[in-house]
Image (cartoon, rainbow, N blue to C red; front, side, top):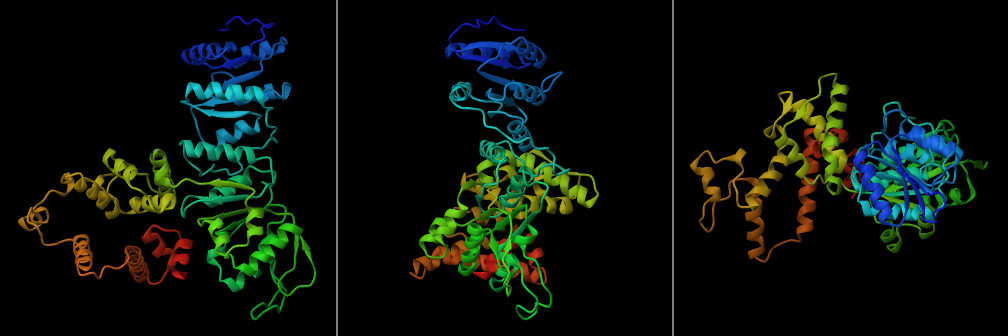
Length: 497
């Protein structure tokens, strides 16, 4: 169904292809109110017929999922005939593949539903003033299992847009984010959706390698270069030739190695340790860190010239607590993934359990959530995970919130007179839990004038947790890291400090 269109009108011409009648009507009225000439189409075939008749808009908006021809197929056909036409893709299915597909098929911008109507008007206005960004056509689903980057929050939409825009380039990228936010997943996605996708993706974590071995890891070594070098070995730069080298925790790289890395980035060549023949490579660098590199530059711990070499494009990954709306979908994915690994049926969450998981701040970010889901698949007794099945840290967090609000948690009703003393109105109730005893001790020290810096005490408690986890796991760092809800690299870094 179309509205009449005066082709000689000086007003900006915009076409809307959307199968939802109510949304078509709203968009049509909105753009008309913004002094634009609008023509609406119910499906892609009708719009293609109008294009074949010689008509063409200045901006085109299209949905992705429509009956008949889908939006991406339509977009591709239009882009082949009108490569400079700005095409804005609308979709309610907001994921990485949709975003990258949109950009790679020639979209000017990607607009996830539901969107603010004013934002749509501003985007269309911007489309009139800019040329469509040209993209190389990329075969999607490089990873048969699909992308593991999950989320539909505004922060993740920005990330998807950035990956889409970078997908045609070989530019250096610096990824900033807390431990556990998925920096390596983003680096892998940048590689998989780049012109280098058919070449190696090599990842190396600076924090996990002894400082005296980093140069040999990066650049390789000749036979006899040092004790234990019994044969010639290629380094990660050679292994990544033609592809991408991901340098995780770049802030932990020794200063001397930073100098050698800078030289490789500038010249494109290096020498193996103990070698005398230069080796040329073509490698894209993606670096990542949880640290503030600007501060490390000021402190003299990171080369300023290397920082500017790496900081060409920067992506900032949000902490999980900043995108709590993504937690339900992430939890479902991790439970399903764990079930497949264990060859059992996936478990589901009760509404109460899911709410507690969403409310928890997740200091270890996505990795901590993933480890918790693995724990639940093993430890929860039934097919539906109830509130009381959650790990103690989640239950304690919920209890603290309720007590602060002046309510006794329903799943911790007092069952004896001794427990009732905890909430006694007497001025100095006897501490019964370890948390209350710790609180009592800290207050006592403060009153004696012997109170230590809280940060120092926090570090001591963390160290005790690390020691306990290592003791329980028999000294195995991987198992200890799982107990703490950290990644192995985080535990390694904390043990070094």
